Length: 314
Length: 209
Image 1 (tube, rainbow over the protein chains, first blue to last red):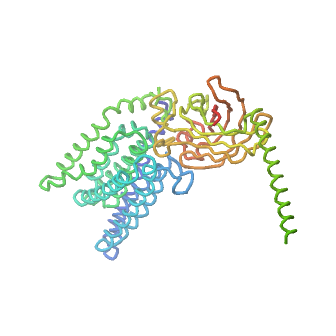
Image 2: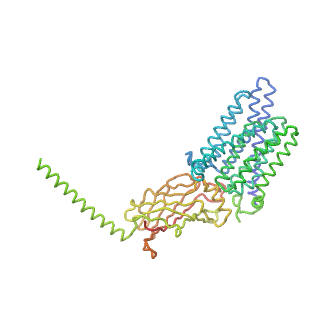
Image 3: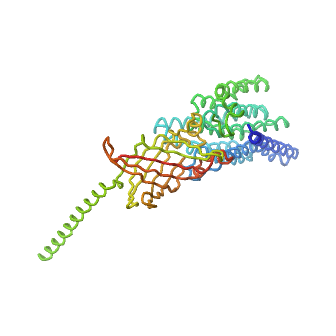
């Protein structure tokens, strides 16, 4: 590994982490400041929800843009699933920002789910279009896959909401970060190399958010972060499994991970530390299962197995 | 009335007779041309004896070559009258071969060709212009990774002959230079690991249909 590669690698890890931390810290700090002034309490809630979402969303958008570039065309049918990720990440950022500013009691859930259904429709219509055309038989198979993926999206969004309700910022952000970080070797091995780099960026942004949460305790991460997280994971599943060569069982394990996160929350008697340890243990087992075989190959990449950070072949 | 009918009948016979004569003479001319060159005939691509090779710069120090093993399509090349030509060639992206299994997986994946999402690369010629005795500039639509853009290839006709195993065989080599990032295949361009300019060489042979 050359000095230049090391610098680029560290920048690729540090930059999304810093964006996540700064976004969350700014949101929480402004929220604390406004909360002390009673007339601005609604505004304070908005900043609290917006901060981490902005941190994760901006890191996600910038990492996807830096690695994959802009789509070569803006004709919807011609845009690949990978490039849709960039457009969906921007759309997701706009939609969760709208949710963060909606008033908590009445409009927020409606705005949240309206935004999520827009994202679900875009994912099912555009990102799965090629699979319907080229991989699945028209009829039952195409309908089952499309409906099944739509159902998974709805349930995964719901699971993220449950996690945000039960856990504070740092434990939930750390648990969520474990999913992309421990899945990196498996995603790398699928052939969708950009996806593992994006996963690393998303994971580091969540670590940054967790650090901000440790500094300013007692806050909630908020459902907008869950929306962006599921959006990222759906891209990995689509590009990694449907359009690259991730084995089906790896995709199933990855798809199950958001639900593993909320399993310990069902045991309300456990302390937050015990729930965090249980969550991390579940994700470590699942992540280890899918990443175990590919990990040595990834390590070789970082220790001089290839000529550049983009070249893994020897 | 009677005179009018006779005049019309005579005119009709003359027109019909003239067309018959013209038709016969056309058939003879076409037969002669076909026997002489066979280049205006339609040929079906013989994938086993055809090659599709791509070339891209590697780290600014050398050129790297890869191939697509599965190619199909048809062509009809008329050097005398290029506008009569036709070219429609497709390669199966899944068949990419770079002499390294891991790299082939990467090339098939979402970073490069996204083979499952966009299973084929296709070039359809639209306009054909003579460039020299045996060379034609073919401008057509190249569809790669879902994006269709107009590109110009240089096609060199190599020849045609009776195949000893039967039928008539012909072949040509065409070279197409593109910027792969125009099609969203931009992985490795930004950091200079791989070049943007990509040369695709298609050496085809086909059997007369």
